[in-house]
Length: 468
Image (cartoon, rainbow, N blue to C red; front, side):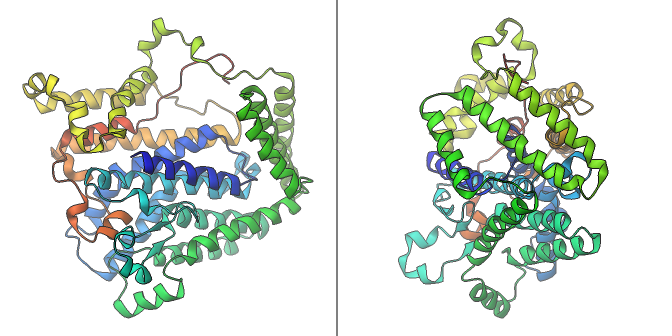
């Protein structure tokens, strides 16, 4: 688990550096990662069984599933792709980054079964391009290295699709051109995905044309860098490449010096500066965006005047913390910490031998009812409307609302059918590498699925001093 987390941190850091014009906050990215992880263990399997219930190696059924899964993972970022209202102030890098982290969250969670089955899933992630994957069996069998298969991964596939849509919308403007380019890239990425649909001659030709599958990821990254450079010129951003590098070096120095106040202020000011430039460029084409420009400029003035304070645990009101969902959610996450060291014993972390006697005497419906009550209460107490203004608040509200609604519906569905195994196995790149059902642990029970459903629920952070 530790090597897998190290690969994940590297991929997120590397893509954050490559998206130097991105304006979304880290908190927003974490919520979209959670959305991708949530889709993997709750939505993917039921839909796959509806499309191809017998897992037939049918070309059309498999290709239809590739299209459906790609669209499903793009649902959380539809607001960014539509580009209406305040979302038009976002950079093209924001669209790429939001889609990237959703796909990366999906791939990251599909690596969990391989950890339990003691597969080499951590080594499947490549250092470059970040988020891409390589068949880990090639590391164990050097003789097959010449025939190894690479994949861009859902992160780069989704990022490429989102980049095509937002770039065409920003520079070409006409809806026909936007849909033509976006759907073309969408179909290309669906073709690039594996599983059973490719006939043998075509699969080999595609494998050679894409340099064993590695070409797609590099094309996506090259397009990302090029489009950001074009947008920088379009928005008349005076920041040069050397200034971008100096900015990141300054952030690293602030972290080394533990100057988190300065780091937070610098990041907020830089994001607002880029968003204002984009909004001003958009307002020259559409006067309705002028209102967004004034709001962003006023927000920038408040950032300069306010004293940014880094949140601290000292400010939490612990006496009444038990009344908040974040408190119980944090306890659930803490209970799963041993999984980082002993991933194969996940069932014994929650339902361990100490409490086994008491839990074995409870009817299963009692636990299911408690789970539904927790999720239903979480849904009822979640904000009914957008609580933060601007594009950032809209993005966070949309992804949280989707997670709450879908999780409540899926848990209720699982209880009605009394089959928690409805949620796995599901198609993943790691299972495709294994080429067998042995990738999925045979001893996974309803307890395991309940655990994952609880873990993927986003909890509101506590109210801390300085937190806006």
